[in-house]
Picture (cartoon, rainbow, N blue to C red):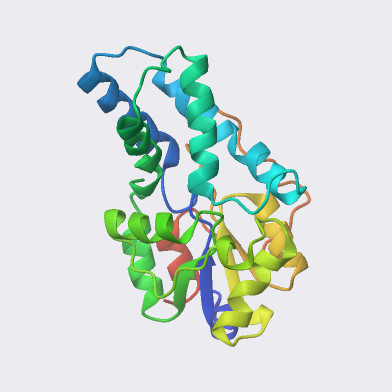
Length: 240
């Protein structure tokens, strides 16, 4: 247990895609179910990876000013429409496209996530700090049973992580100092950006996020305030 850190931190905010929920497994399951229902065969795992692969470039278009502020739901839809054309599935209609796009609202949690969050919630304020838009995050919490105290989205700052404005949201809105807030994430670059804004950092690796056999993130030379193998161990180390 890191009692001193547990005493100084008042709120934990979590990256969501990949850290709290298994986006890849969930999206593949949704696509496969859709394909079975519609009699469509495709490389659905490749489709899921390509869909997620368009995420950072799409957000960069917003950060750079090439696009005006655009919610993740709408960026996901732009990527989906392009991929359907590339996969020769352009005949899929509007209702089905909307259903597929909203699969990102129905992502399933990692096995330790709900129990770990419930335990952490007993001692800390817990919430999201995600690039996902508010509607997406609220729907996902309902679907997955995520017991957030607060849902914070980059949408509120109109700046996507790793823009500094996104990391300034939790301390500002919760009335805390930056050092009283810890970002928990599976992505070292996200944590590095949070640390630059004065937040504490908790690293929880998710080795299966991008699928089996993918190399782990290189964390050599990285500093985190806390490292845990899952949310249960995170709670233990914070004294929750």
